[in-house]
Image (cartoon, rainbow, N blue to C red):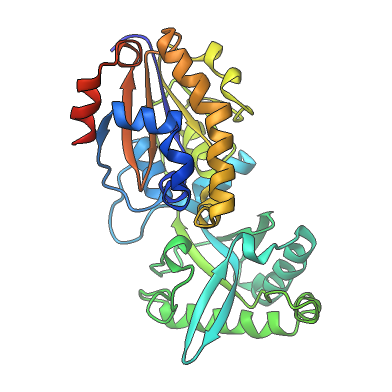
Length: 339
């Protein structure tokens, strides 16, 4: 297929649409969805959707190497060893269970992150652990060898009882013991003394996930990628795609689209957890409408763009061609609404 084609990946878009239905009903987004061709995706998370968009297939039980690729996306350096995310979290007791809270509700500052990773580093420096707070709420651990555990992505653990979600595998007992030791050390940290006094969530644990080594991606999928999100930036670099930061609106990319397939990523995995809030969701959709969907719809009609695909792992994928934008008829709407 000739021309320029743009895929827009918006983590949590379907979640925002469910939380703010009134904003969607009269929007350009609703027009795009109702007139486009719909495709179901075999993915259950932002991370699995991102890897599949770069033709990376998960193998074995280890899971996707989210940490190593994200680390590379941020630092431009290959991690020297096996990489995991060990994100700061809060375990909240409810009756006899412990529920996980993480991400934006914790509002971890960089100073707090630096203080707490120093605690971890002090405990396990002799084991070859190297810990980096590349973002205040996204921590990375590089170890010499495969840690020997199977982990659950943090998105699947947030808001859940963690008892059945803790690391499994050959070294699970060791990792459970290490997590308990870190919890005790965090409890004694001045960071949590202050947080408790201020009635804020304490940072009383870490959540390991995304374990793996940096993969090789030799097959180019996208001619150009715009993203500020670490995982997709890493995937773009590994696949030798032309990479830029995401602009503030569609005007920053329409004139720069490459011939062939282009990818735009708006948002990150943490923003998914805010989108169930109606106020946040409606504000997000209004912003997307004004800055992205309306100008992209106009570009389709003007043939400055030949096709547009909008996707997230809940929505699936919806693709609309330029001729559909120019020559829409009522019977098309009837047929697509019944798919």
